Amino acid sequence: MSILSVEKLTKQFGGLTAVSDINLSIQKNELVGLIGPNGAGKTTFFNLLTGVYKPTKGKISLNVGKEPISLIDKRTDQIASLGIARTFQNIRLFKQLTVMDNVLIGMHQKNNVGTIRSILRVPSFFKMEDKLKKEALELLAIFNLEDSADVLAENLSYGQQRRLEIVRALATEPSLLFLDEPAAGMNPQESVELTKLIRKIQQEFDLTVILIEHDMSVVMNVCERIYVLEYGRLLAEGTPEAIRSNPDVLRAYLGEEE
Ligand SMILES: Nc1ncnc2c1ncn2[C@@H]1O[C@H](COP(=O)(O)OP(=O)(O)OP(=O)(O)O)[C@@H](O)[C@H]1O
Image 1 (tube, rainbow, N blue to C red):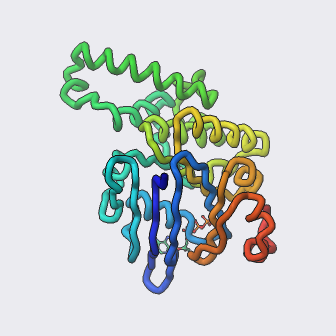
Image 2: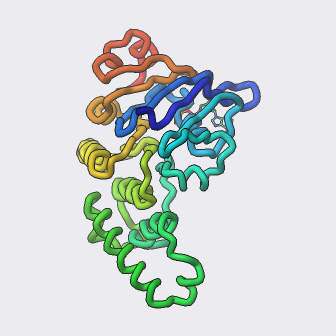
């Protein structure tokens, strides 16, 4: 079943067409890669799917309930509440807050803790808060961050901050997770560990994952299917094996670092 489908999606910034006539369909529980040279339109594509930008043209349809839902004209918060979570190329954590609080914010988005209850601090608030903290610690443990729960996010290493971003996205209990260059700035060993973690959470949390990544070893190891963009257009689509030997892809990447 297709969980997300995109038809003729286009985004123009003045005279520049950043995303051009993209058609794509993602199946439930797939782990799909989105690759392409710098400026190919990958982040713009994520921004269109998550409501940051309004498309110039095209359709985006999400299939998580009885009827498909159009994401065109939905705000970012509405899209998030439909079960789409993302991370950003430039880490966007609450750096002055602890690791735990960063995760709790993600959870509060989903769980109705309630402003009145939290201001009045009634017993049910503390009960809910304890439950959420326990769940947050379990999520942090998957990413080997549980011992840093009380550390300020700004004091984490770069690799840890990237992992915390994923935990915070997971805390909203998404069905679709968009990861924008999760391995950027990581050393090779951290990238390998992250690859395993992405696969693990996809299976454990029944997730559909779309991953933008420049690190080809991450993409080729983790993705079941890959879409390649170039100058905003869809250049190729296929399994990692097919993409690896596709002449158009090789040409687009010629001279690019792998
Ligand atoms: N807000 C904007 N206003 C104008 N042009 C933009 C805007 N956002 C992106 N662009 C342009 O759209 C094109 C696609 O950019 P985008 O960031 O989506 O590419 P990308 O594939 O994610 O690149 P990278 O791999 O370098 O992150 C680029 O030419 C970029 O300069």
